Length: 435
Image 1 (tube, rainbow, N blue to C red):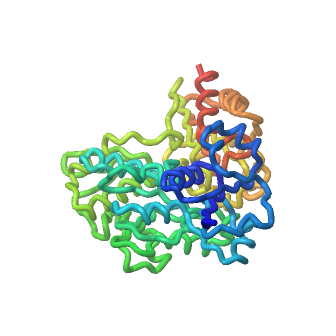
Image 2: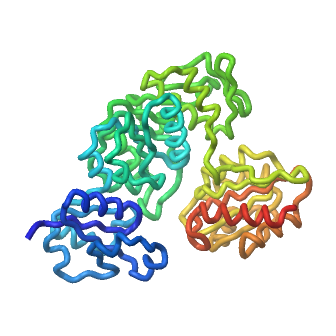
């Protein structure tokens, strides 16, 4: 009997592995910890009918013929199936490892707590604009195995800490870390573990890039950095670029001026400029292409300006560092919508900025008491039950020249499918009720 691959996880990643093995005539089966009814409700994909799938529980001999396990990033190592895999000494791999085994295209790998999707999308935009065939894939929702049959000049691979945790093959032409902030402690147990997992991206790369804020903190003097120096100079690919300057929300190079949304987005731009510098692309051309890049939705997205009141959707902010960046960017007199599903987070990091810029906090979600206990500040707060309620409360408290900002510093899974679902619910409520 031929040995089988076992794919654990029936999400987008797991299905891309199944489709790949099916095309290659490699024997495989799929196990998912959730119920069949869960997937029936979420997914009517007809491909599932042709694959061997076990849901929730498996027989004692289920792993007998398995030679390799391919794990989706969402599965935590504390799951009971890991004990049996370890006991049987079965090798663990990921879709990224499989992709790298079959692809010879140069890979640009990018990770970070915040900004990585913006960076991979911006970089893809620049490379395509310069007629270099490229694709951003990975943690942004496009499985690498789904595009493996296509020819590219560069693959831009977005990697989360969950993916890096399980990967074995870290080969890349360029590896980049946008930033590292407090996050995912439930999964990685400590910031030290989280840092070390992120640093795996430099395991086997030709060129390494990191935000210069992290260099002294991590003692990484042998890695080239990008970012802003303490003397307001700009660093690109390890070198000061004196003909590049910034003020407020504008970046200037020669006769070109580029608008950016806050210093966190300036750092994203500098990371892209550093990558393209390594690729020896014309700096001025790259700069011009970044100028016409359209930022992704749900990231400090101005959705309505009415009666001199701005309404911002920053639903993508699922941690404090991201919300802090939004608060720094938006003008004062903020009505802040905060909260969501529970996550171990240091909300005290927001305290000073809240006191400086926020006039009202509207709490939504299951973690509101957890946040309140940490903050303990004298700012008016109101609790809301849903997004319609949020917008009604904001309308009743807003005056001209205020700013309403949804930046929850929390995941969305208590009430919504994901941050996109949450952001769209907010946008709909604003467009329906703010008139």
